[in-house]
Structures are given as C-alpha cells and as structure tokens.
Amino acid sequence: MSSSPSEVTIKFYSDAGHGWGAVKRGLIDTLGIADKISGYSYQNGNTVYLEEDLDLTTLIDTLVLFGTTSIKFIKNHTNGRSPIRSYDRFSA
Image (cartoon, rainbow, N blue to C red):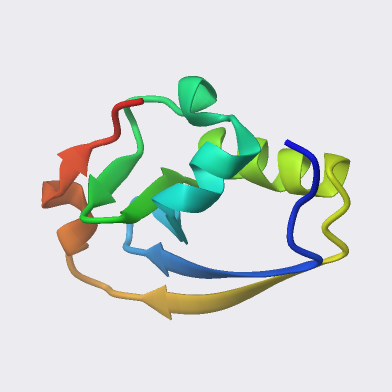
C-alpha cells in the first residue's frame, strides 16, 4: 500500500461481553491486512466489524505505520446482545 488516509473514524460497538470496530471492507483490502484478520471478526455487507482484542489493533497499527495521523472513535454500547454476533464471520 502506498498511502493511508490521514484521518480515520471508526464506529465502535460493544455489548456486555465484547466490542468491535466497524470499517469498510475496502479499507482492509487497501491496507493489505485481510489475511491477518481472524474469524472472531464479522462482516455484514461491505462493513467489517473487527474484534477489539487483536484485529482492531492490527488495523490501527497498520494505519499508523502507513501515516494515518488521526484515528477517532464513535462509541455505541448496548446492554443486551449485540446483533453483530449474528453476522457472518469475516473471511479473507
């Protein structure tokens, strides 16, 4: 990848047990990290929900490596079970 966006906003969804950062599939493909994303992340349409422990960190580390200077989060929490858990598992 030759460059990354200078600013990225990630919607962060969480429930009582876990959290996921939502980004477009195109960003993951552009960064060349699809093969590094685990089966603990989910996908619904063109949006990938990266699990918070490893996959979201992989994304953030890669963005910083390629020059992204601002990463912002918009947080959404539910006390119930997140519908993200019923989406398809991510596959490269």
